[in-house]
Length: 107
Image (cartoon, rainbow, N blue to C red; front, side, top):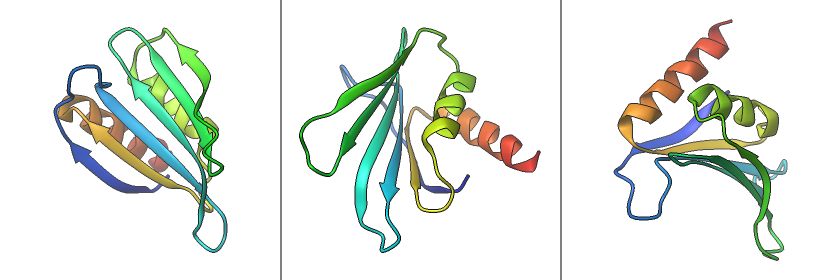
């Protein structure tokens, strides 16, 4: 799993503590869809939207609030060949997630 970009920022009112975006691309680099994984205090939500911009769809909700659950969703939706992975959010969560990803890669 290759992280294209990460940024540690404080969340605003109504925003998730951590947000992971997986941009689905075709061979020429055009973005055709996106998964947005949002980590809230009481729920993790995975949202999907394609490039037709018909509107996002909640594809998965999880009440097991931990970074292992986020990593599981990333592994489910991320394709090493073409996708871009972006992590943005609170430093204490983001750094732990990056560590989990690194551990996963080393195994």
